[in-house]
Structure formats: C-alpha cells, structure tokens
Length: 314
Image (cartoon, rainbow, N blue to C red; front, side):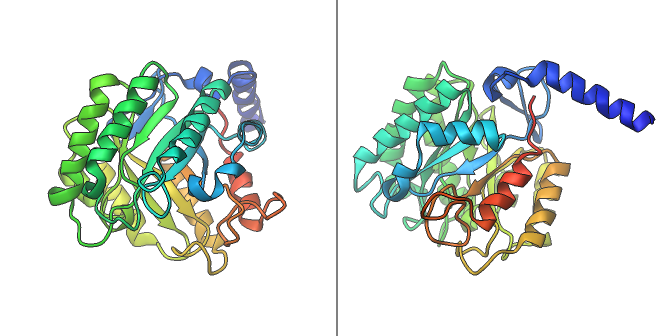
C-alpha cells in the first residue's frame, strides 16, 4: 500500500510539472556536471531520441510532422541530425546543410533538443576536413547560440589510423574554440577512436573546455560487457558520456536483431542516467532502421519506441 501511495505521488507530481511542457520547456539550458548532463535546475537528465540516417539519402524522411510524432507519441526529447561529410554529403554537396538548418529550426519550434552531427565515417580522420568543420560550426553556433536546443557533435566516428592525442583532440580543440567564440553555453559532443569506442582516451586527457561530453557508439549484436566496463571506468574519472548512436543489430546495421542484448544495454544506460539516440529513424532497408518503406514501424522501431516511453520529463 505504501509503495502504491508513493507511486501515485510521483505520478501526480510528474503530471503537474511535465504535462503540456515540451522537453526544452521542462529542462531549459543543459550543462555538464562531472559525469552527468544536467538541466538548468541541476537535475540529471538522460535525453533519449532517434538519429536520422544520412541527410543526403534520407533527408525527405524527416518532416516536422514526423518529428512532432516522435516528441508526442514516442516521448522523444532529442533528435540527432546526421550530416555525412563524404559519400555525397556536405563536402561533396554543401546544399545538404539546408536540410540540417530545417531540422534545427523544427526542433526549436517543437521544443526538442537537436544534435548537429558532423558525420565523418569513410574520411576516417576528422582533420581531413578540419577547415570546413570550423567554418560550418562557426556558422551554426553564430545562428543558434541563443537557443538551448542545440548540441554540437564534432566528429561522428573517427576510425582507421588515428589517435586521440595526435588527431582527434587537436581537431576538437580547434572546432570547439570556433564554437565557443559564439556560443559559450551549449554542450559540445566529441567522439573518440575506433568508431567512438575508445572512450578511455578522452577520460585520461579531456578537452579543457566546459560543457563537453564524449560520445560512445555501440551495436548490441557486436559490443558487450567489455564496452560497458569501459564506460564505467571513464565515468569514474569524471567525464560525461552520451550514447549518440546505438543499434539493435550488429555493427553493420544489418544481420538480424539482438533485442535481449539491447535490453541489457538499455538497462545499463538507464541505471547510470546516460542518454542516447538510436540508429536510425529511416526506411533504409536494413535491420536497424525504425521504418519500413511505407513508414510503418519495423520490429526494431517498435522496440525502441517502447523503450523510449521510459523517457518521461522532466
């Protein structure tokens, strides 16, 4: 009876504080405090949402109406806009930035948080297009410094023959400097080596800027306890981690679903108040995609939606 009464009180408080509020209205400006992301009231928050696929391929999937559905029916608080640099992305086709701006503006209108993802992948080394990244984030931060909605993800998945000390940190220092000249407040997200799994490297040698968190990526069919242990070890050193990409499949994005392993991962993240965005809100025709060709939910999409419903705010 006592447990029921307590649960009712918690629900009553939530109904009176969250009902009718957008995520940004509920949380306001975010910041990094030790190993956690907190809201403007100092409360730990774990933002959960979806990631787009490459805007150059699947930009038409993302509409304001679908983002509102994510907010209202999935209980999503954040959306990650993945702008590939190569593979027909921004470096080859700068006009893809227009879709990024559209998504940011919709996020502001809907009161959602948005991750501006500079999605390096096959270009491996973030320094390859460092000048273009500085120019891009200088422009984005000058446009949106006054809005609490925006998080800047500087490098999706550094990979290949790159190191934190030699390549990733020097790159992140220069891009962060450009952002901070315009925007002293919004959170900067930084990837690490081996497709954003070498989180131990920034834990040992973090950036000297405030409000920086470090991204980690996993796929439940490929990555297991060893990577969860790495997260705990990194957080024990005081850095904040945000899972800006994860999938219900193996690391190829295909190969069937690993939902039991995904449940283990989500329980782990929930217990540590670590937020996430799932790959992908697309109809890409791969197992990890949330949508079918006629925009119904796939098995993966239904699983993620069901688990995102834990995500009540504030």
